[in-house]
Length: 126
Image 1: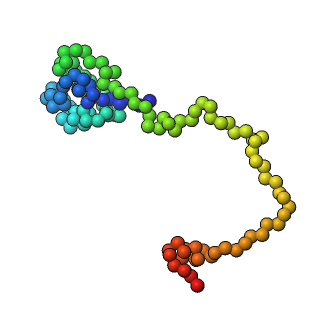
Image 2: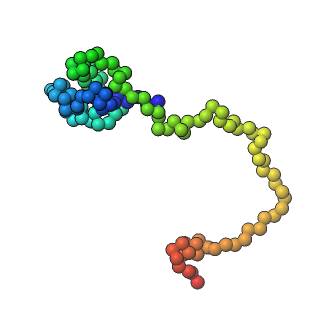
Image 3: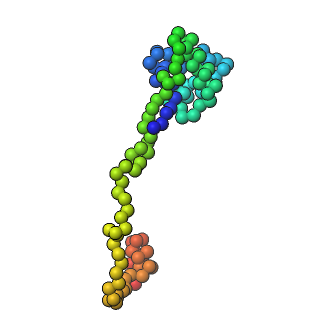
């Protein structure tokens, strides 16, 4: 679960433009901060800034603004990677065991490293 401050959706729901909010908080919050928050959800923000924005929104809407109204709950982008509760448990009794067969293994020759590289480059070595 990821909580983000989504000022843009709050402004849309209450028919308030970012410009109007900028004018309301003029001198207390930088215009670029307001526009950035209105454009995309913020993951980190100064609480003083949130307080100033909430007071300004209360003046614009005439209603008390709850902090939770501006929060957006998004599932974590890594949620699908989390291990399920029914994850398989390692059972050593089912593990394959190495057993020596006693037979000699013959290793056959293959191409040399130079031949493999030359083939990869599209050339033939003599």
